[in-house]
Amino acid sequence: MPITILVVEDDKFLRELISQKLIKEGFNVESAIDGEEGIKMVKELNPAVVLLDLILPGADGFEVLSRIKGDPALSSIPVIILSNLGQKEDVEKGLRLGAADYLIKAHFTPGEIIEKIKNVLK
Image (cartoon, rainbow, N blue to C red; front, side, top):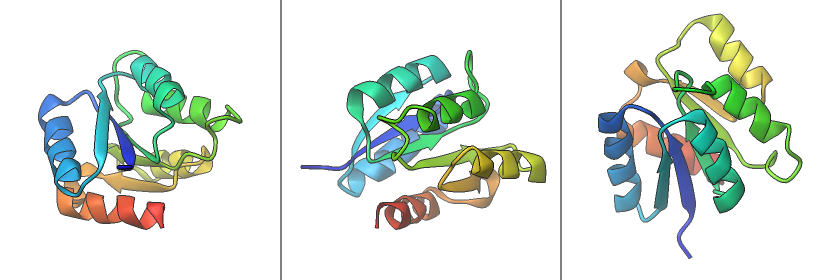
């Protein structure tokens, strides 16, 4: 049974790039393009990992993260933030809200992102 990863990312190019990489690695990939859809899909799919952008239409990534972590049925799902918001306050807030990891888009290649996902799954 392939492991499901949910990618919540509004940037089509990046979403497809990461999804393709994950599919090549044998993961089942689902994606959402905004926060509300992301929350709905986490509830429906119960993915192994959520890869979450912070700047999203509607509910932003911090809102999505706090709702996942605030729901006892979902709180054990690891969430990796993947964002362009690289300020210390943003990183600290993400980790404080329960993110398993915080990756700044500009600093990581898709291959490195896959490695981070695999580490969280161990």
